[in-house]
Amino acid sequence: MSDFKIEQTKLTPRVALLKDGCEINIKGECLPEDARAFFKPILEWTEQIKSDSPPKITLNLDLPYFNSSSSKQLMKLFYLLEDYKEENEAVAIEVNWYYLEGDVLIFEKGEEFDELTELRFNIIKS
Amino acid sequence: MREINFDLVDNFDLNLWYCGKFNDSLTEYLIEMSSADSGDVGLGKSKKRVSFLMAESFQNIVRHGNANEDKEIKGGGFGIFNRNEKFHIFSSNSVSLDQAAVLEEQLSELSELDQDELKKRYLDKMRDGSFSDKGGAGLGLIEMARKSGNQIQYSFTNEANNQKEFNLQIDKALSKEEGEKPNLKIAESIDFLDSLRANGVLLLFKGDFDNEYANNLIHMLMENILKDEKEGYKMKVIFHIAIELIQNISRHGLKINGVTQGIFMLKQHNNSFEIVSKNYLSQENIEKLNKEFLILSKKSNIELVQIYKDRIRKNARDESKSGGVGLIDVMKYTNGQFAHVVEDKKTEKELTLTATVEL
Image (cartoon, rainbow over the protein chains, first blue to last red):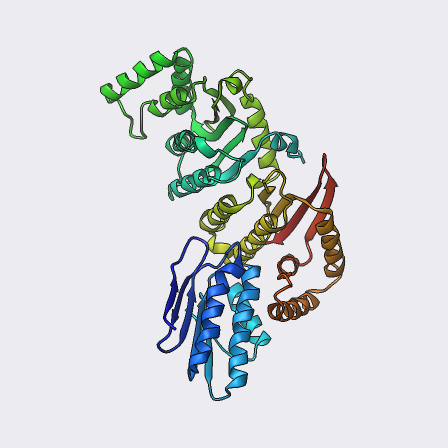
């Protein structure tokens, strides 16, 4: 396993998947036309990193905007982490959901995902 | 209220109309949008020539229009439309009566000159260096006349408060055959712009919704039109709906001759925004959509949230299912003010989606 990065474009976020400390960082507007293709390597990396049995995985999501097809892909990512937690109770999984002050829409989306998953969500004003 | 003449829109492969504030960054996006290299619709190979004429036309608005303290020109209008090998670039903006007089004199003089004389006039102006503070001593106008190879169409209308509307149209044919056909008269463009304004249209785009076009449209909305801090949350909701409708055309629009033709409009009224999309749809997708609307339109917002959550949970576990949550999101954010109409067009069925967001 090695680190994996995707540079930010006009309509897609910067992605940095870091092996050390096992961090998944996604930052920026997320409006890919084909969300499944965009998230595929992120989901694959996450699936593979689980075989290293990391004691902690941190997911940092700073998405000022994302389209509805990305919602499904984000949910898939949450499920991967949820499954990992279910298999290894001792593992710590943290989701940091960032929103800009006053951005009610993204704050609400964070709350929605928090309700939809069993993961520990920190909704943080950035 | 006056109706928008969609027959005129249908007559052209690409239509991009904008009514609103003008600044330099918007210019860049509009050029990007109408000159994206994709599909058979649009400007394709003529990108460079068109970009040049568009830039000149924009600079004409920015140069001669009356800017506010944010260096923005308000109330201007811009349109580009093309079919086959011919395109038209139209602009409209307010100018002072003094400016109108100068422009009218310059344009009237230019209309008397042939290509050689235009070239000579251009070189003389360059040598002479008689540039005004606002730019180029009519250099832009000379260049437009030279590069289009056609007489510039212009008119001054709606005189009020010591201002006049300065309307300008450049017509460019890329083939001899097209060059022999009559140009669309500027009066028709002025009339069309008036109908857009009467309907509160900020932006109308008709073209191929594949790839670059749709992305450029989204990017322009993101960076320009919807950047209004005062109405932050609502603007974000409007943006969200706009993206969903634009991407809905790209994903589900019926491809005809390799092109996913569609129309996107953003309208602003006193207390609301309207986001409209039009595209062709297959019979199968129409039936699916009708069924979905029938179910969703009867639900309260609380029920919609529940359906959204159930669906996203289920679909994320099942690769065969598509998201299916975009429509629910739009329904939720518009408090049900989300209409769909299916009409029979020549050979296909056309879907119109209209989402209204109250401010």
